[in-house]
Amino acid sequence: MKHKSANNLSEVNFWLQRLSKTSLRAIHIMGIVGAGGGIIVGADKQLWINYWIAAMVTGCLLLAWEVVRDWRWLIQLKGVLTLVKVAMLALFIPFAEFKTEIFLFIILLSVVVSHGPAGLRHYSVVHRKKIDTKKEIKG
Image (cartoon, helix red, strand yellow):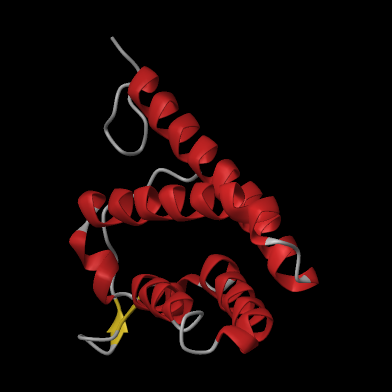
């Protein structure tokens, strides 16, 4: 009998998904660090643009992963705050002189979203209470 994980995936599928998501997240963090460093020190855009592109592409893929896995992610605080972070990135255009401050605030928000208690991250802004969604593949 084939072993099943808590998500009812075969063990091979579970590990493929876990390693894929972990790899995406690792590239995302490397992109954030590279672009963020360039933004914070005011380096020439050509020095950090590839990191920015990597961060944006992997961020979009991770966001899509969550929505496809369970649409309720969009109404949980972790999804809502992720969308707020994306909207804040758009502020780089009209408020370019505040890029560093906006970027640092996005980083702080990211820590709250990623490492906050489950009751906070899974809080539904629609239902006004914590809601559970499908078991997620941690990465």
